[in-house]
Image (cartoon, rainbow, N blue to C red):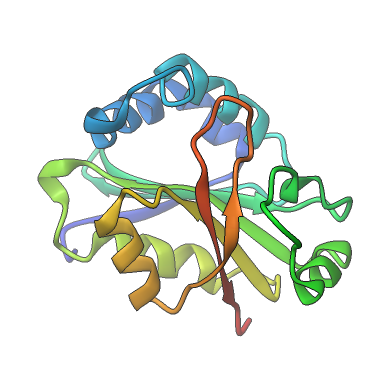
Length: 181
């Protein structure tokens, strides 16, 4: 990690780098780019919506001018629409924190394959969350992605339940982590 630098981007700056972000997405998820949901165009459509959300922030790890990986997220709207597609009941405490604007959603965390297993994902994760003012963070993880699930659980995340956020998306595990900010 010592030769890498971290950069923070707001929604506008991230949108200006959308094509390179999509390049990293395709490389990081090459083995999982099956179906319409995980395609480059679908990612770019989601990114276009996400960068406009309040509290959007992206942290990238750079080797010189090369993106090695990044993480981004945004504040969840108090309306609670984020939880659409949740299987079962969203815990009352989570509903209350959502209504108070106290939930931050991590949407993507990825590291290019050649840079994995060096602690970069953890560093990106911690760097993004350390500045957040919300009391709770949430992330969706593919149950078949064992390395990601293992990492999140070892970083203190806990399962809330299962969720299918989009009609064409897979069913994800919805995880939560209390923030101490």
